[in-house]
Length: 410
Ligand SMILES: Cc1cc2nc3c(=O)[nH]c(=O)nc-3n(C[C@H](O)[C@H](O)[C@H](O)COP(=O)(O)OP(=O)(O)OC[C@H]3O[C@@H](n4cnc5c(N)ncnc54)[C@H](O)[C@@H]3O)c2cc1C
Image (cartoon, rainbow, N blue to C red):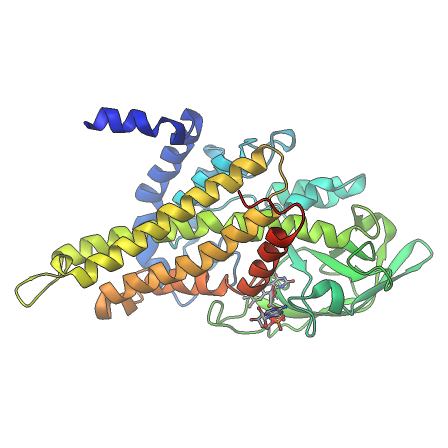
């Protein structure tokens, strides 16, 4: 079979032309603009300011470079890549977003995008000007506050933070923990129990809370982690924090569902491209290294032990890509993708981390060098087996689906 025939056979799996065009634009930016900046980024002690990587641009590069990247993002329209058309964005399908993000995740250097949680598109009335528009324009940023000291995997059952209605306000009391970027954001999206009998089934409400609200007290020292040694996660206390009733996001009692909607796309499905870009880079680096590194008289690429690692990495990449594209395409078709997103989250983070682990091993000591992105990639993928819902919780969600009456195993 010649190359043309094999291309034709792949017809059903070809990406639409417009998606390939976006992929090519993203790929050019990564190769020409971001990769040349990568070593400086990795060697900077200031790049670890939290999981919202775009914040790091301001810490690592001079103003000119950070502004240039922001300018490029706005000029090409990529800044609004993830924003729906009715809100001034590119209106791209979920599949196109996945494909473009795989390109940007090929490097450790972040590219600035409007980081809009999908649930903010449900803003109403004054919320639109106060929160939604400034977040789309990058003038305000958000943090998601669900987890508490005693409520991580089971937030619905264990959440203690509560909100009580007093006149035209809600008064929030409680403590949230591990909240990424709480101290840098402008708006906290806070879940609180408003009906203890109903809890996650209609008794949790989501509030938009200004970080500067006098009832919000953030422990500024934060919680240093290997991902963010300078602290990107914070403990946040709500001490008789008064929030006007207009700042309920969505409906009272609907806040748990909103949290799940946000997590499904942002923290689960979009972990697919986050891993894919890093895995592809790790494989390419490993192939180059294995071909050029010789021991006992021949390149290590000629050793089966190394070849099999490369093959395992490649299988993981291809299988994850198929799963991610399927989940994105189903989301585009309007299907409920909670199970598919849980699969993508589980597989991307576990297989992603093991793929990088292979790459580190193939590189020997160089694999541990901070000049290469491998250990940086590993940290992000290993972290993602916990943040956004642990691997065990994803398995629990998938098991619940396949054991349910509706659980078609197709
Ligand atoms: C860097 C970082 C950033 C974060 N950012 C945010 C954020 O921005 N906002 C936010 O709200 N939260 C955030 N989190 C919190 C994160 O979502 C939780 O840590 C996570 O959901 C796990 O909760 P936990 O730590 O309480 O673990 P636990 O719930 O205490 O679980 C401990 C262990 O038990 C396992 N386990 C629990 N239940 C079961 C079960 N039923 N069956 C089998 N095993 C089980 C878990 O999988 C885990 O391995 C962040 C965490 C980190 C580390």
